Amino acid sequence: MNATEPKPRRGDATRATILAAARERFASDGYERATIRAIAADAGIDPALVMRYFGNKEGLFAAAAEIDLRLPDLAALPRKTLGAAVVEHFLSRWEDDEILQGLLRVAATNAQGAERLRSVFATQLVPRLTAVCGDPKSGAQRAGLVASQLMGFALCRYILELPPVATLRRADAVKWLAPTIQRYLTGDRPD
Amino acid sequence: MNATEPKPRRGDATRATILAAARERFASDGYERATIRAIAADAGIDPALVMRYFGNKEGLFAAAAEIDLRLPDLAALPRKTLGAAVVEHFLSRWEDDEILQGLLRVAATNAQGAERLRSVFATQLVPRLTAVCGDPKSGAQRAGLVASQLMGFALCRYILELPPVATLRRADAVKWLAPTIQRYLTGDRPD
DNA sequence: TCTCGTTGTCAACATCCGTTGACAACAGAT
DNA sequence: ATCTGTTGTCAACGGATGTTGACAACGAGA
Image (cartoon, rainbow over all chains, first blue to last red; front, side, top):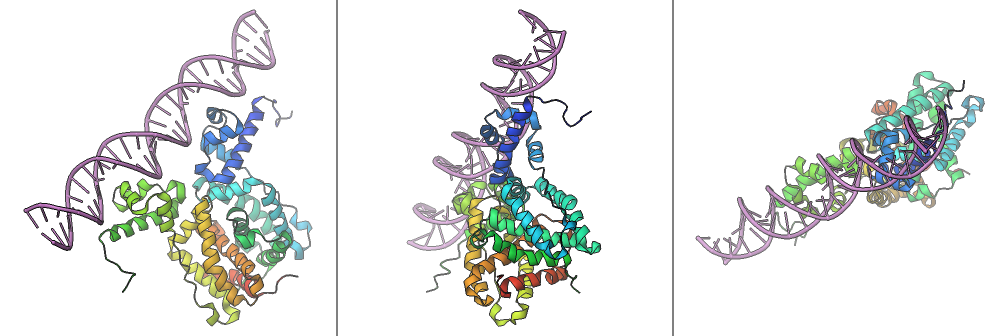
């Protein structure tokens, strides 16, 4: 009984095509300017078909914004290298997945997008970081600080394309950011 | 010859009213969803009047997004307290000025907004920080790193309202962030 | 009082948006 | 070949948006 593959329908392919087009549009244009008409045109189909597959625009966004951060097993790493590992992972993640950029863009102006981002943070980042930070009581706060630096860097580098940040060589970025993340995770709580 | 005050016209008051309404709308809704009609309604006037005063929506945004970071004289402070001073200043700035939140929201999805933000960064932040960081060669990079942490924190706290960051007590926020900013400014360049 | 530039209103325009319902093309099972 | 559910297209709707031009009210200077 394999419940995950009930039947290979024909529409699944176009469904995937629509999702890919939607991700690109949401990533580059944000929620409002990513129109269903444009997404449908990119996918080479009729706008009405998008509605049949995803109900409405909110549903399309919800489907397009499903995210897995794919955090590695941090507990297996030497504690001293935690900061560098986290930074490396997220830089890779941001570079090869436009969904993350899309979610950040949308979350800045759309309530639903912000809620989705909070959910990803709470369910995927907080538990994993709390487990390795060594101070479970302040785990959520520490995870929040980590997120603030990582998302701020991504914002400057990939979204705003702020010159000194966007042109920074990747290795240099890691060297600058890793100590910050390391301290937020494993450093003493101030006072 | 006081060229700055040519004449106190009557329309200047309504012009200011429109700007105030526009700032609020841009701050809470972003560029696309902040409609001219809604702004005019908030200001209690006709939408057409907005066009007469600011030409078009782009012009209105350009006028509403004029920003002065009001950085204090950092050179007069003890070098060791630079990080804390910068963090304190920006937290205050973010809390009492909705224009900053508006600019960040808009910059995430609107090219014109992003350009404006890059301009504020380049003309107001980079020179001032370069002057005090002690390493003029890497001044712009250091300023970029500072901006990435400060904007990331503001994003999480004021825009996304990420629970652990939004609820952090202000004094604790300073204690966590100050060492990061201090290192970005005055720390050794890695390798 | 008359005049004229400034302020403001009103109605309308062209355009775009999300969304809907009716209908055609197609595929596989009978 | 015929039926049936799936996949897709088409045309249109109601509403919202930025923008425009014609016109009314106002206020100061002659």
